[in-house]
Length: 186
Image 1: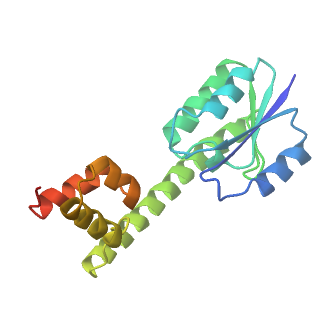
Image 2: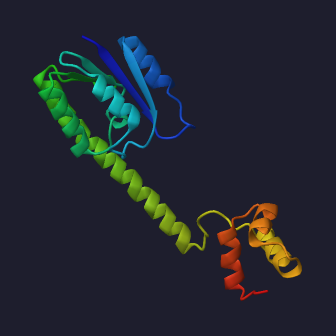
């Protein structure tokens, strides 16, 4: 009977510290770490962790939102654990599916986890919309100086677009787009 732990953060800027400590304190035998969005269904390290589980094993996570962001996915995973006689533990949420109350609490908490993710998404979208309304230009800023230099080089030299692209450190398609936009030809 093996205890398998799984940790996840969304970006490489985030740390595993609190998850790592809790899982180490719990006493997991094998630990899988992943940098991936919780909304993504196919995650390589999660898949490896799930494949490693055998009947009688325990799957441990720090918190429900580290496993998934949708109730449907969480319930699907729980059903798989149940069908394969695998116990599930969420340390922070005090869920242990070896008990009926643990299984009930898991279902309720997964709904809250999904609602939280949706609220975050709504706030982000509202913030982006407000920024647009206030005249904020979103997205990566144009590299105006490099584009101007590339257009000038195109008009004043015999360099190819590929050569200009390398010298100005911008892509050839970007140069072609600006040539077209400015009606420039040789």
